[in-house]
Image 1 (tube, rainbow, N blue to C red):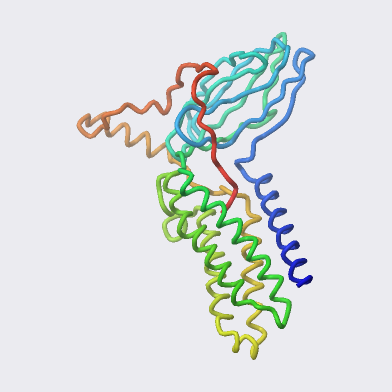
Image 2: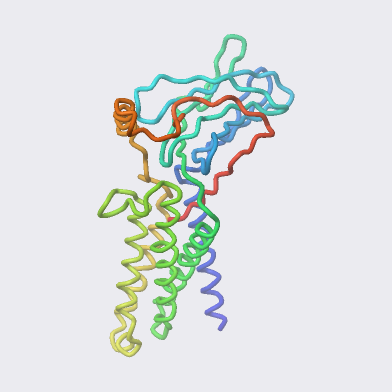
Length: 314
């Protein structure tokens, strides 16, 4: 009993550590920092993901200062000119808004602050790339997040159990496979559909790394489950335990790959071509006007801000 409890604790520590690493290293983790302008500290946390409707706020904290500046942005991987918006002061904050994009649309942006003729660029030598996505309902997001976390937890515990010749692998393997099925294969595509408009963009339809790594982990557990399904055969052939260990290692490696790498990305060239076709054939154009590339009017603090419900899971 004591050994089992210790292994569960170790599995939990490994799971939490991998989740923390993935979240801190992923391409959607905010870029944080501070810069000294006019003898005052300006703090920033530049987000790289925005979910739901509405524009994405870009906010800097400058208590008691009189700093001014601009937000510059353009559509990612295009030859667009940079659009510049003034940063507006609201109490202790400076704020501007990135215009809403279709699901999987990306903008690159940076900030320039003025100091008596000297310009401070944030970040120094690069732009921030942010990706927009649709709102994911809680009934799909919460089961997905819970199931994927538990899948990693049980997977790690099963991998540790594989080192014991008397380990009870079948039950843990069933749970790991079932949780991966529910979280990654059932609710994963539903979340993907709400966020980016497609159920599956991995193999064989695309190169979405999140979908592909989930598929690889699930296949690894299906193979492991087949290997240890018969407890009698596993007892006679102990090497079958290593299929479970291999599946656990594959799952750990999958979870360590930063979330959203090589994820869904809107092709603005195709979007512009489609808009040009609709403009040439007004009968084919949708009833509503899409203001994707037009900045909206600045908003006040009382306007609704749609929060980003991203969670770094495969």
